[in-house]
Every structure is written in C-alpha cells, then in structure tokens.
Length: 113
View (tube, rainbow, N blue to C red):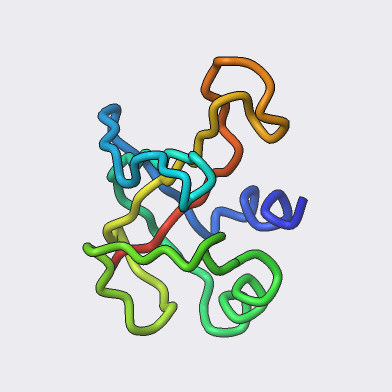
C-alpha cells in the first residue's frame, strides 16, 4: 500500500531483463526457499526529503540478512539507470507448504549501485 503512494508520482522507475539466475538454492537451513534474480536498472529522483520518507516507510532489510555480491551501495541516494535486481523468493507449496508447485512468497527490488 505504501509503495502505491510513491509510484504514480514518477519518483522512481525500474526495468528488468527476461533472464533469471538462481541466487540461492533451497536448503533445510533456509527453510527450503529458493531465490531467483533478474538483473536490471532503476532510477530514483526523489530528493533528500522524499527519499528519507521513502526509506522509513517502504525500504526493508532483507528477510534473512541476505547480501548481494554486486551491491556497491554506500548511501541510499538518487541515481539514474543504476544497477538493480528483482529478487523472487519461492517455496514449494507456498507459505503453507501444501502441494508440489513452487510459489512466490516474496519479492524485493534491490538497488545495487
């Protein structure tokens, strides 16, 4: 819901390629969740005040403290066409674990540069 407040204002945008790569294989240690990444670009044009509000209202830490090897971000700042990734977390059977289909249980846009 918070993201929908920012999207129509044109303060940021992103685009991602069609190819996926496996970032994390499912293991018992990670709750049998797989993580896929799509690489792309994002643009932030918020200015300090709106970016600070966005940071506190929308930006979240990764669910299990994951880090991204390509990440070079030192400050959350405006950028044009900077590196980004779309992270999909999948779990067999979804949140309930029922069934054999892999279900998306989490999405995240990650600023890499």
